[in-house]
Image (cartoon, rainbow, N blue to C red; front, top):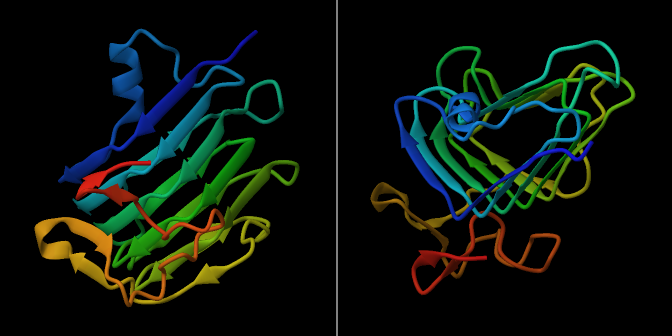
Length: 193
């Protein structure tokens, strides 16, 4: 069985609620949690979201009932999930995840930036990310943190105007694992990979 790939590129999200994957996928007549399904978020910005921005859930107790895969790269989170015990990104039952080159700024302060509810055999990693004025990264087995986890003020161009480009003196310039800036990538003022 080939799983479903759900990909979001150059997405800008904000407002009171979270990005509701299940209802979005139901609108597309896609089963969101088939074994082998993959969620991909690349070059996305989430700003001023009261609750968590991303919540992927798959129930079950073994490899045949858990899944999917989750990949997030070059995303920026600003003022997201700052209500008590909230998680900016919550991944439940995900078998494989890779979170890289992301900025979590002023997000998850009263809870978690990323919360994994995972089994010991899963392969989940967060690396080359910046977590500043933000909640903790949590996993039951405490084994998800990889290389180059930073905690610097990102120094955005103008976050009040939703301009999350990094200023020339930002400590996150050229710090991503691909040699680019951390966070969302802009070209000519627009989100662009």
